[in-house]
Image (tube, rainbow, N blue to C red; front, side, top):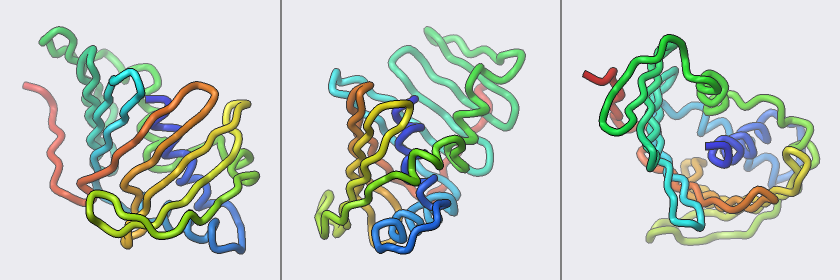
Length: 186
């Protein structure tokens, strides 16, 4: 989850910085398109084979599926499924508020992204669709972070490969503005 949030923060916060070059302009366009998306799906894949799946519906609903269970957040209410049993938590799960906020309006990374180097890697194909690849190099949490992002003609990210001193992850995005239903478990 932290890598997923870091990936979102990395390009979304670039949209807030004031730059006058094509790379940073492109990242601002990506951040604006991503923030305007009503819904999306994300899959985070790590080299060990682990996966985290997330569905998001603005303004305040998300569902995370992990090997250890599932979490659903609707507004200020958090539900957790562990070993097939759903429970409603008395208050929002620790970190859930920050994680949800970071999906839409990343905070605390502007200084790192002000130093980011954005490199245009040119046109690319992803699953038979034309994309444009960008590489973003910066520091986050005291260490180097490199993100290689595939961006569609709609300015939305569809793949993001992140490498940092904390490890590697690939984030696959899909289902932008699709009808994703997230409701309280029965």
